[in-house]
Length: 254
Image (tube, rainbow, N blue to C red; front, side, top):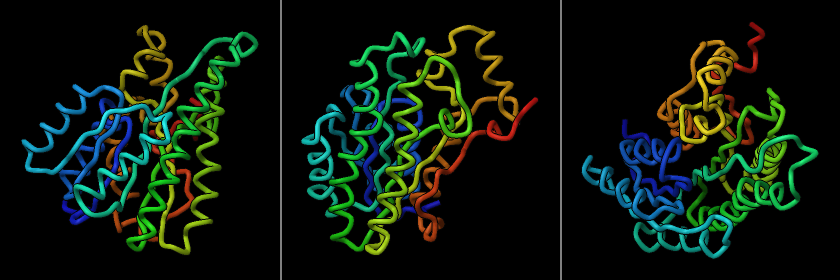
């Protein structure tokens, strides 16, 4: 516990799922947390939960596609807590799914914008602030889809999330000399709203479950614990990685 004492963190996509679980765990580990997402009521309930548990948090709702929103999140962190040490850029969508020959240009572009471009815009402003204070840790939520695994019908999702791995490596190399670590976490299947949307029948869920060596899907808190590791000084020599948290899906053929 208290691995993040004295740290200030931003979490996007914090209204549900992995983002919400991570924001709560960051706070439990001692960080002061700025939470962002589109849905203000969910963010306010999250802030209330964190404060009720003895933590510190503030919320700012907005659209991650907006560069101004990312600037505002960083500004709020500095205004409230004086600095920024950690950023978990977790907001994302499945995007337009179905046969790739039928996916629209607009649908493909939307996935790239929300999953990849928005993460770049976030990191652009987060890293600029971290450098002023001696460094920090940036983490992106990518996925095993398009990295160690492929599914038909999700080309936009796979391409946009795979792009985050290249972004991770480029930023890690560029800002390592300023003590900014950059990593991507690659979850397997996680029991979130997005997972249930993609796998809406018992047969689909059974198929996905069996892909994993552990023969189950993760809870959001299990991924959150890996994110906390990458955010903390326990991972002080870890940068530029695509960190699989996939329950052994990448090595399973049974």
